[in-house]
Image (cartoon, rainbow, N blue to C red; front, side):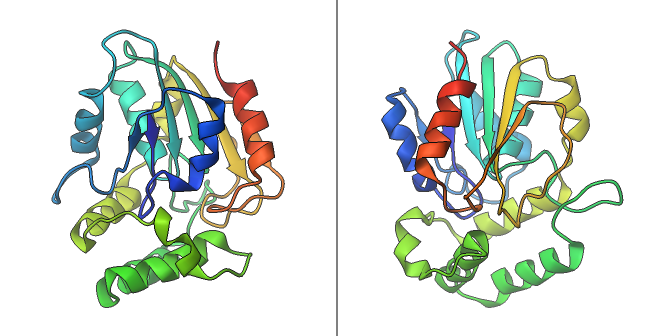
Length: 219
């Protein structure tokens, strides 16, 4: 399965189609109707998985929180996790690099005051930083979700810390992160990590990503 991220469907990872894998794309923004919790989303995904331990979850951004939680709850179903521009905890702590609380509050305020489309224009520019883009060029990557669903996902991002869960996982996992990502900062993780030298949170060096994915995928 291929899990999208907050505000985005799986289109930012469309180049993975070249791997010719039987990936089932899941837009986590429209999977359920708010209110929902992290466990609610994970339950919905678990119901779609094959009943034996041969499932690979490739997850982008916030989708990585779901993938880690699914592997923690149902290791009998999961063969491998590949987490792209993701992290077990998005917000900063004294011992953890992440989004600063004041910056997260500023983003949450924009979600409250802006229309959904204007919020996505703003968030797309943020995700592409430091590159300057026309956010409308990425509108095919925007999820057709409600502001209520985005708010519920933002609450999950704010409150979820899966660092200990990641340490306890027994399944194979690999993080693939962008060097220029300002939403997912570098931390030492209990998992293999690969950094893409010329990629941002939203935009990928496709050839480099495909090369890393081919190496990371279990046989």
